[in-house]
Length: 206
Length: 144
Image (cartoon, rainbow over all chains, first blue to last red; front, side, top):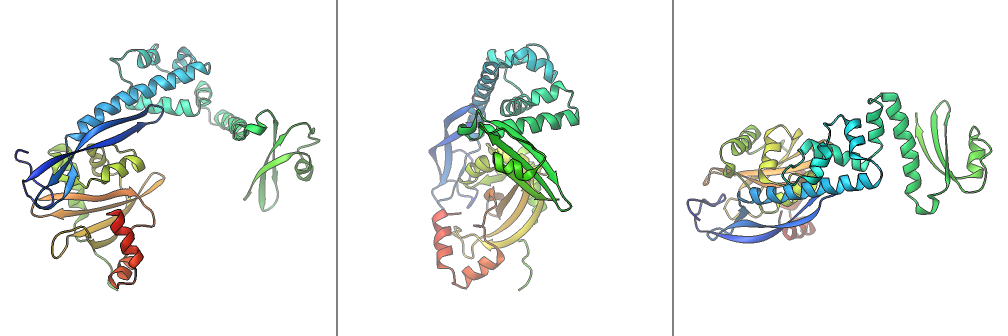
């Protein structure tokens, strides 16, 4: 074990033990790497071996590349073309294609983070398309939040959505209604909305 | 009860983490369970990533919890271990470490999301008074 010493007792009678470490990356899957633990035969203390970092980083780089490939494949399948995403995000042409296809070119950490956000919330592309205008971004966000709320429950996936906001002196009531066949007479009267449609609502003190 | 005081200067620990990243990674050691938790809870997957996070101001609102005997210590008297809580973004974390004069190295004992299993001054007092058998069993099982 060379000149190495135990971090606990300073002893030099050290042995290597092998262990398996599981690594995960969002959208990249799971991988395992063999890592080394250093055990001191004098005091029994076990610590991480500094050489593990290199092994872990190497495997993480592979997982990150896989992650980008999966993300771009998913987005492409959903109809978001690379050319569209590059234009909306202001990326140089063919950047995404290179990240996806060229094994010698790994995406940067910031590039990976950006595309993970886009994969999680593709409507951020719409926000980017609107030059990040704050009001438009809020409208896009709320519209997508409503749509997403339907997707939570498979049973009501094809139902229509109604929403309304009601204010009084002390309360702000925000209601989302999901309806199948019953026509909504009005969304201005709170009681009527609640009578006619199945409702989920959030009520918050002002 | 006197106000608990840290056994070590936290700035010396932070400097050691910085020097470990810049000069020699072995200046700070990790107990074997530390990296698993750092990876799961804070997305810090390598020793260098963890030490760089600490050295570059990652521990916000650092607050000392207590300085307690390290239960796995083989020394008499046992090593003192300083514990802190901190904030990082939306996560409240827990850090504990100690220094070994014999090897001149800092050792990180714990680095994980803060939960109710950490030892507060009150729980430490209860344990020392022998009033918490269950607490002892739990910590011995966890080994950390």
